[in-house]
Length: 113
Image (cartoon, rainbow, N blue to C red):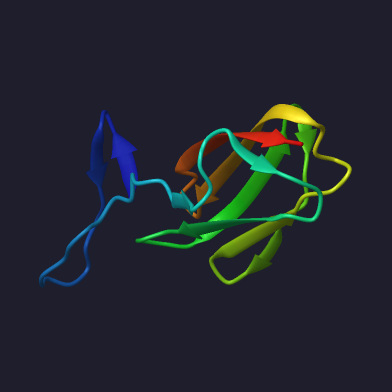
């Protein structure tokens, strides 16, 4: 199959019914945490990332400009607040990509006290 001027073109050897589906929807990211929520060291931040058509291929998380390590169990991702999460109001950002490179960004302001 190839794209020619915005049209997908292919050659079929056998006749019959065929369908084609294009995945353009990025993974969905959910969290029970609220914006400006107060957190302390040791708190667990939980996120659920789901993909309807393919699978979640990659997840990347930062606090400010610093990468943080998430623990994954199925569709659930967890971060235990540690020394890499500075005090004060911080932006936590998650990015998730599916197998077709559709991307979703999720941001949350959290107040580490």
